[in-house]
Length: 153
Image (tube, rainbow, N blue to C red; front, side, top):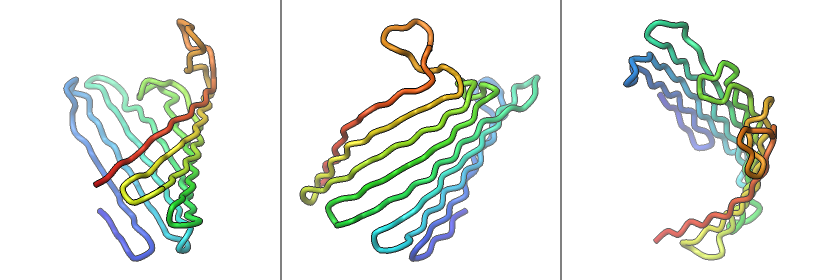
């Protein structure tokens, strides 16, 4: 289901059924975006997924993300994304909750090229990240830098 206008878009998604292990899967998602001005946009993306084993109790995980985009000029965009992910029952394999923040810059030096440096910080309620060559996860947070490029023609 979707609804779009000149300044907004709302999409409701569902996927469900049985997987190869005969687990019943149901996932609902909501994506929404709005243009606040010719230079500012905001977006939301959220989902919840439930998994029920053939002989067991249904458990679920969920996540939400909020996006803010600012385009000060046609060649440059700044995006900030904040996310929360909750998997306290270990359904998705994490067994904890996470908060993430990502700051991205999109630079378009000319048509057909976008350069994207990105800084990300992840923090979990429990240690799930590895330090150096640890055998087991010992850190509750981590940071990263990624440099991407998109070439179109």
